[in-house]
Length: 81
Image (cartoon, rainbow, N blue to C red; front, side):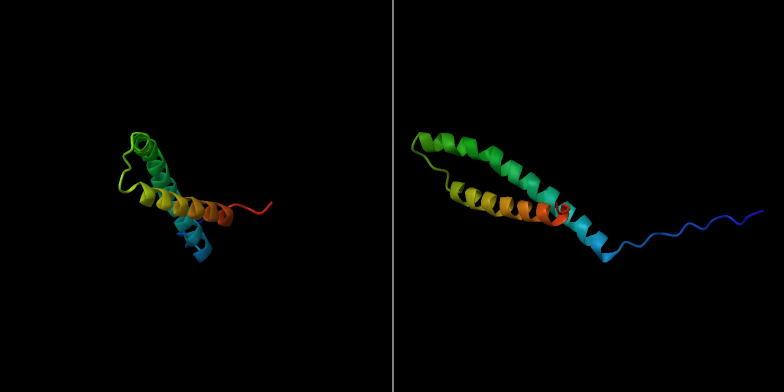
C-alpha cells in the first residue's frame, strides 16, 4: 500500500499576483472604456445640433487616460517579440 498523496495548496508568487491584478485592472479599464465609447456618439449628435453635453470633454479625457493605461497594461503582460 502506498500512502495517499497529500495535496498541497500552491502559494501564488508575487509575480503571479501582480499579473492577476493587472489582468483584473485591464478588464475593468477596457469595460469602462467601451462604455464611454458607446456614450460619445449620442453626445456628438447633440454637438451637431449646437448642444454640447457638459461632461463630453471629461469623457474624452477619461477615454484618453484609459486607452493609455490599457495599452501600457497590454505591453507589460504580453511577451516580448
